[in-house]
Image 1 (cartoon, rainbow, N blue to C red):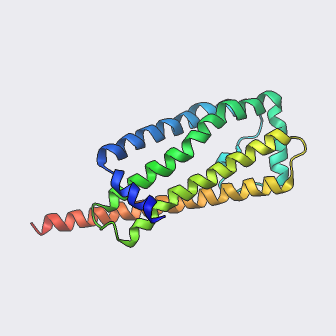
Image 2 (image 1 turned 60 degrees about the vertical axis):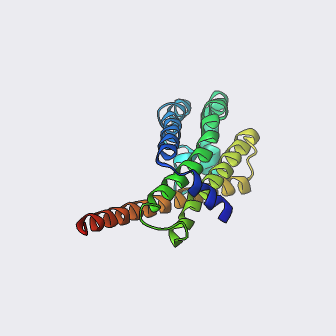
Image 3 (image 1 turned 45 degrees about the vertical axis):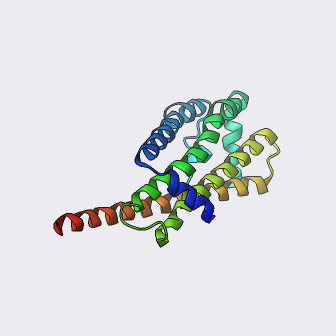
Length: 188
């Protein structure tokens, strides 16, 4: 893990962070504005697995996948999933870089803050686990294993929790950077 952290710090220039931020959020924008709404046109359900931060139960998974119909399940697999497989990796690298870049403004690479760059990595891993579980549920419908639905839900909750923790810590880091910047200007 320390080699990943070191690599992230080494590539986290302002230009690289900006580039990854733009690419990551273009993909996320495509998910929010195109692939999720497209899949939702096939169902009366209003929330897909990706947007259920508190998880879901087996019955909800079966109901949602069933309500999509065959065309909706195909749209989930072939319209939404390609974007949703690009996003977790982009998020993991891009947001780790963003955090590394911010904390380099007020702390050393050896600071305890450096470990926070792992949160987007683990969030991305759980997002991939969620995606693989959803694919398994779609491909086995109507015989979805309750254990797969439970694992998908757990992956969603962990992904959401890690992402929320990351953004809370990013806000704290930004506030700390601002505090250091103000103190530095006052001392001049």
